Image (cartoon, rainbow over all chains, first blue to last red; front, side):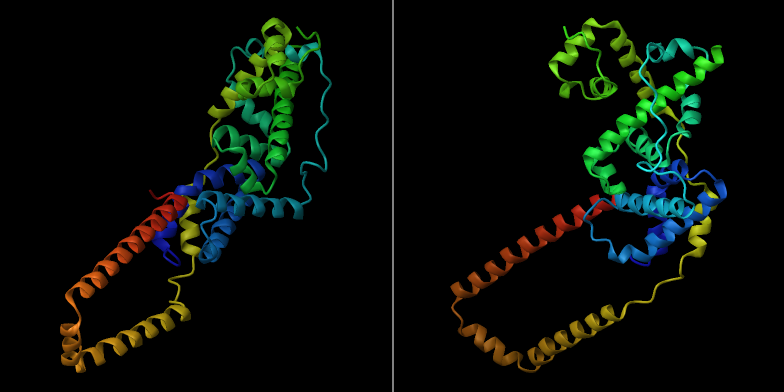
Length: 175
Length: 148
C-alpha cells in the first residue's frame, strides 16, 4: 500500500466520514477545514510506511486528524477544555422540563447541531465520536490521547451542557 | 427510597448503561417523577444526537488531496538491496546445484528412504505452520485496515 495512490484513495474513502466529523466539529471556518483535511491526508500519506498496525487504520488517521485540529486551535488560541469551560448552570427545576414538550414542533436534530456549536471543540468531537460514530471509550481515548475515564467524564459534562443550552434557548423563546 | 435527587452523571449512566447503574439509583428513578423526566430528556437528546447530519469531506477536497500526493514513490533503497541479496542467494543455490546435480542425486540415492520421508514430512509441516501464521498475520492486518 505504501506509495500507492489508488490504495490511498481507498483509504480516504474509508476514513473521510470520520475525518470530516472530527474536523467539521472542531474547526468552524469552511476554508480552514479544507486546508486542514488536506494537511491530514498528506501527513497520513507521508507517515503511512510507519503505520505499525497497533491500532485500526481509521483510529490512527482519526488521531492524526484530532492532533492536527488541536495544533491549529492552539495556534489560534481558541478554547480548549480545561482552560475555559463554559460555566455550568445551577440545577433548577426548570431544567427538568421535558425537552420534547418545549420543542414539539421543531426539528430536534437541527437544534442540536446549532447548540452543539456552543460547546468547546473537544466536547463537540467527543459527542460526535461517541454518539454518531458509535466509537467506544477506548477508541476515542486512542484518537484523543485521553484516558478512558477522562473521555467518559468529558462526555458527561458535554451532554449536560448541551441539554442546558437546548433548554435555556427554548425558555428564552417562550418568554 | 433515597429522597436526594440523582446527579446528572447518575441519570446519564442510567440512560446509557443501565446495567452499570446502582440499585438505589434505579429504585429512586422508578419512584421520582423529576429524575425520571430528566432521564427522558437525556434519552431524547441521545437519540437525536445519533441522527444529527454528519459533516463529510466533499469530493472536491478528495480530488485536491489526490492531486497533491507525490507522484509514485521510488522503490526504497532497502527494497533494492533485499532483491539483490535474494537474487545472489538464489544464484548460490541454483548454480552449484546444477553443476553438481549428479553428485547430489548420488547422495540422495544413498540416503535411506525413511530418513528422506521424514525430512520431506518435517519440511511440509513447517511450511504448513508458517503458511498458517502468515495467513493469520495477513488477515489481522486487513482487519486493521478495514478492507475485509
